[in-house]
Amino acid sequence: MPDGGCFCGKCRITYTGEPALKALCHCLDCRKITGSTYSTNLLVPEDGFQVTSGQPKTISKTADGGNTITSHFCPDCGSTLFRDGASFPGLKVVKVGVMDDVDALDQAKPGVELYTPHRVAWVAETPGAEQRKTMS
Image 1 (spheres, helix red, strand yellow):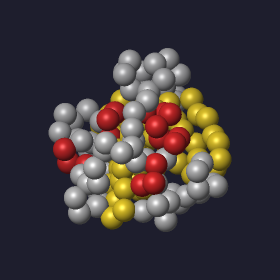
Image 2 (cartoon, one colour):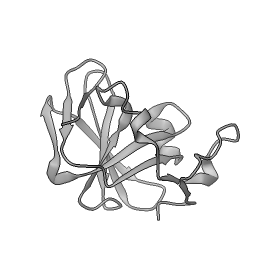
Image 3 (cartoon, helix red, strand yellow):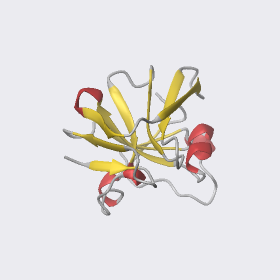
Image 4 (tube, one colour):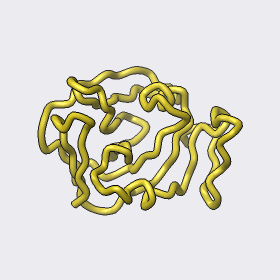
């Protein structure tokens, strides 16, 4: 079972099963919550997902695609652990960088890149990944 947690260790997550999708997101929200050029995500079934310790704080907003999306983050250190919302029914969007396995990012090669018009000019397309202008 893959486990992960925030920077300070207060909030912990786990999931079972295989990710339904591995995706990079270049939307402007993901830039803000990661403080970087994009986010690397595993979309995992919510029935196998669990917060195992701590109580993440949430903030919801209307995302670039028009649906409400909720970010779940540690109330102490601020690390975003996962997101969910109507755009991802039955799924949790886990931020791969919070996973404990040091190889998690290597194993999360994306099958799709989202919001590619927002990709910064010096970041290349991921070879073999579907390129989408929006969420769908």
